[in-house]
Image 1 (cartoon, rainbow, N blue to C red):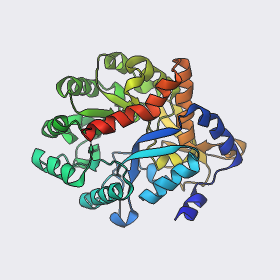
Image 2 (tube, helix red, strand yellow):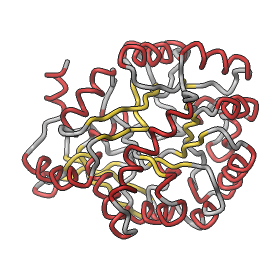
Image 3 (cartoon, helix red, strand yellow):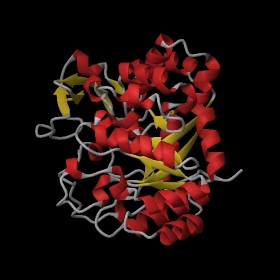
Image 4 (spheres, rainbow, N blue to C red):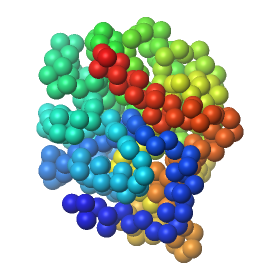
Length: 353
């Protein structure tokens, strides 16, 4: 399995040179707060993507068993000790129990912490029992748990993280990994209103807003960071985001104590360069590497010398955050908090240590 993965993740000379500059920036120990694990065998062969959401991540990896995750760290972060927080990939059909059972078994086997993928239709008691029985530390959910008849922009946070479930998370100090809805992403006024409500109403749960609120383009921010300055507890992970300006605004608005490193593995194995066009993010990729991407507005193929210089999504993310941290004059200790200490503290609280 490791040998096959190394074929998929070929580290070229320019990758190694790119990483050398990042290695000095990164602490020796890293906590990756945002990773996906799943087996292809747990999904139906006729698996179809939800038309409301992007499908390009499945072009990077059709599965990511925990052995692949561990091996990926060895390949891409070879001189670092990395601990992941793991959770399942999006469910498909009626396989929610299967993917959660796999996450539970991986956590038992490796000792790495994990989150359950929760259904908004579970009662408070069922959510509590499932998390305690599986020794999970909280939950991740997603807009796709709702019927596909509901338009994307009609979905609110409390539709898939209902209040009766947030109360359970608040009771135990558990982690809630939130992917915010709506096309306007972080700047959407309803999203901001709901985030302020969670921050004020649930003082003990640990809310992590994934991908800096899916603010991948400058246009996704709006006045969000001015609003988020008012929050006291909400945390943000930087996973699968390469926007230096968004990172800089995040640092300036909430400070280094509420920012967490996340990779969003396995999609950050992707060889790419992200740009923005008319307020939409576009992943530039080497021609032919990820199949026919002509119908995907978030993908564009490149040939020639430019494509040959593309490195891993993970490295692009870390490099962008490095530039933002330099603009904000973060100290080495603050960098260590973001890449390790803040996550460790979050996990320990969820464990009730």
